[in-house]
Length: 185
Image 1 (cartoon, rainbow, N blue to C red):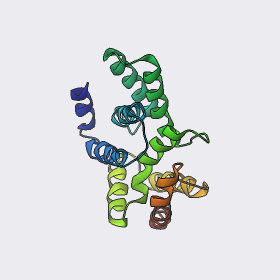
Image 2 (image 1 turned 135 degrees about the horizontal axis):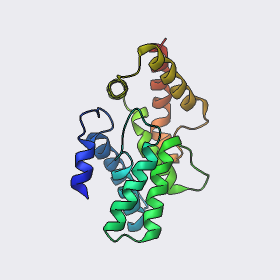
Image 3 (image 1 turned 120 degrees about the vertical axis):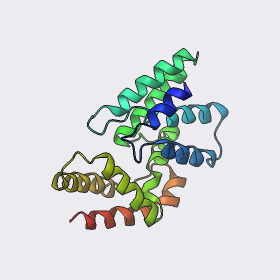
Image 4 (image 1 turned 135 degrees about the vertical axis):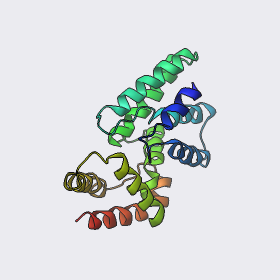
């Protein structure tokens, strides 16, 4: 299963949604306290597969990534309930919205979004890499669409549904997002 994932994350059109993003997410997971072995395993699988399918022109990447995870994990003999939970966690990364009390969902979404709260130079590198992935979009449409996406994050009460991630990254994320919106005109 890993060679197929490694190949996916090495696709030439990926700039941000590549292996380095997965490694960064896994590192953040390593630092999360209080997880059971099963919870950590589920989140690890979800992180590995959450961007397995990434086509900047498509709108169903998360759903297709969840399907890939299900197929691969079933082939590995993973229990159906665990496969379903991994798929659910992956699909949450489409809209980054989590129901109250969903600790694993909150962690998955917060880990995926952690780059928003990175130091400015790392955030700028992320933003530039995403723009490269969307090079097919004309500048005026990119700026308008990107502004809408960033503003949607700023308009919610909390970007990071997990309290520890919120405490660690929220303030910087809001500064980064506001600064990028300014650059978009």
